[in-house]
Structures are given as C-alpha cells and as structure tokens.
Length: 338
Ligand SMILES: NC(=O)c1ccc[n+]([C@@H]2O[C@H](COP(=O)([O-])OP(=O)(O)OC[C@H]3O[C@@H](n4cnc5c(N)ncnc54)[C@H](OP(=O)(O)O)[C@@H]3O)[C@@H](O)[C@H]2O)c1
Image (cartoon, rainbow, N blue to C red; front, top):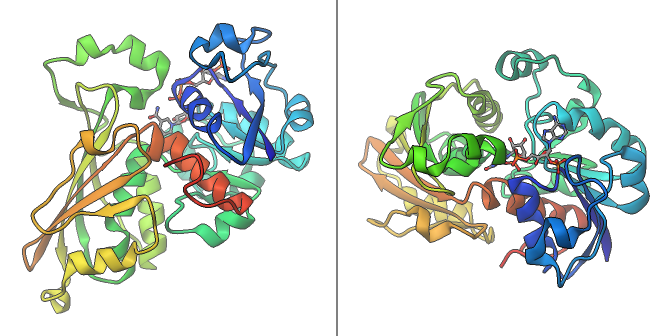
C-alpha cells in the first residue's frame, strides 16, 4: 500500500480523485489538503464518501504533506502548483501535478499563455509529460509528472500515430474542439452555469487558447520537427466531456495506407484507447465517467478526419493522473480505473 494525498481537494478534479482512489486496491488516501476546508472532517466536506473516508482536511503545507504521503496529486490552479511542488520534490515525495505549471518546457511560452513568470524552472526541466500511452518509460522513473491538459490529451492521442510515423502533412492540422462546462473548474463553471450555456454553443479563445502551445510542443516532439496546429475550442452545453474533430491531409506517398489498421497497431496493448471500426465515430456519452479515449477515423485517401472523445475530468485529468501513478508505482495500468 502506498500513502497518497490530494491537494486542492474541494475542486472538481480533487473530488474525482477521491472517487477513484477510495476504490483503488493498492493505495490508501492518508491526506486531504485544502485551504477552504482546512480542519473540517472529510465526512462533512464529502458526505458521499463518508462510509469510506474518515480524515480531517489538512493545510496544504509541503512539510505536513510529506509526513503523511508517499505520492501526492496537486489538483490546483496553475501558479498554485508551482508554489508547493518544489518543496515536495525536495522532501522526496512523488508528485503528479494536474495543473499546467510543469507542462510547458519553454518558460517564455508559459509566461505568454499563462500571464505569469514561472518560479520553478528547475522543476519544469525535471518534469515528465504524463501522457500515459506515449511516455510510460519516462513516467515510471519520474518524481514529478505534469499531467496533460484535457484538450491536449484528446488531440495528441488522436494525432500521435500520423505525426510520429510521418504520415501527416504537417502544414495544416485543424483541431475543432468542444468541451462541457466542467472543463473550466468549479468556480468558473458555477459562474458560467449550465443554465447559461443551455441553448447556446460558442467558440472562445479562438487561436489563442493556452492548450495550443502544449499540443504544439508534444506533436513537435513526436514529429521531430516544428508542428503548429490551428486549434479552436468551443463551450458545449453539457456538464462533462470533450469531443474533438480533427482535419488534416496525408503526405502523398501514404495515400494508399490502411490508417485504421495503423491506429489499431499503434495502440495495441494500451487499455484506454479504443479505435473504432470503419464508419463508426465516438460520442461523448460513450466515454463519460470512464478513462477511455475513443477515436474514429474517416480516411478519404488524401485527407483524414479524426473524431475523438474523452471525459475531461477523468481521461483528461484525474483518471489519467491515477494511470500515471499506476505506471510510476509498477501497478497494473488499469488498477482502480476499470
Ligand atoms: N476541470 C477539468 O476538466 C480539468 C482537466 C484537466 C486539468 N485540469 C486542471 O486541474 C487543476 C484543477 O482543476 P479543477 O477543475 O479541479 O479546478 P477547481 O474546481 O477550480 O479546483 C481547484 C482547487 O484548488 C484550490 N485553490 C483554488 N485557488 C487556489 C489558490 N489560489 N491557491 C491554492 N489553492 C487554490 C481550491 O481547493 P481547496 O479550497 O480545497 O484548497 C479549489 O477547489 C487546474 O489546474 C486545471 O486547469 C482541469
């Protein structure tokens, strides 16, 4: 049994982490850390877990956390994670950060898209990008894992085979992405409630969303050359779930290739990526409350359309974080998740 903790536990992803971890056969939740629920009993803050969890919420302090936990999930907003991660790393705790603080390797790009100067460049260098299907060897050894963003998870998994095998024409890749309101976190989702989103559908941060540099960084790494995608996010009038439709061209010499077959081979042995058969495409309902990323592909010879769906709070956040923990600790990848 390893001792795990969750910091920023009252948020959306913190709640999802509790839900997954209380059923996990190889871990025990030994710490809940919260500013707003400090000193409150877990049964009061999370009555839904009262029969299984009996803790007092602690202060999110690196010394207290490292006394109580071997591994900790930071379910914090960006900038709050970098304030605490360095102290945790120093004390030997393994850290999985759900925020964007350790994802972007170029600190200037981080500052541009997150509007703050990074305080922990050393941590950024050390951090491993935790896309479980693509980088398991690095994740296994990591002390600090930067859990991917929700939109990037669906986008990178959708494009990785075509980009890393040199099949994609990299000159124009269009990612048309849609997310439910929980993608914005608890506070914002309450401000822009579902009733406001109802009967509406809109694009936001067009061509300037903070997940765009993350997608570009990881696709460039897979391609071995610069990739620059067109990325447009939209707000869907649903609570949770992401659906992305991606448009691109194949390089001419690959026109005759069996793309669906290539995807099935690429993700063989990866339990959470499900490639649809020809003519089948995923919907949000297929993946909500699961850690799956479902991918459907339309191959028209010269061009390809990919449709992918994930639950933003699970495969896009807390489920993938647990998947990363499983890899780091040598547990079966699906432990607690299926
Ligand atoms: N929502 C998603 O779909 C999603 C997907 C992927 C990644 N993420 C990322 O995961 C992280 C958590 O997301 P979330 O949706 O759970 O957010 P959230 O619902 O807004 O919760 C974040 C929690 O962090 C704590 N907190 C808030 N402001 C803080 C501050 N200034 N300093 C320290 N702690 C603070 C609060 O918990 P306490 O009061 O308990 O301390 C808050 O409930 C974010 O970085 C987000 O970008 C979210």
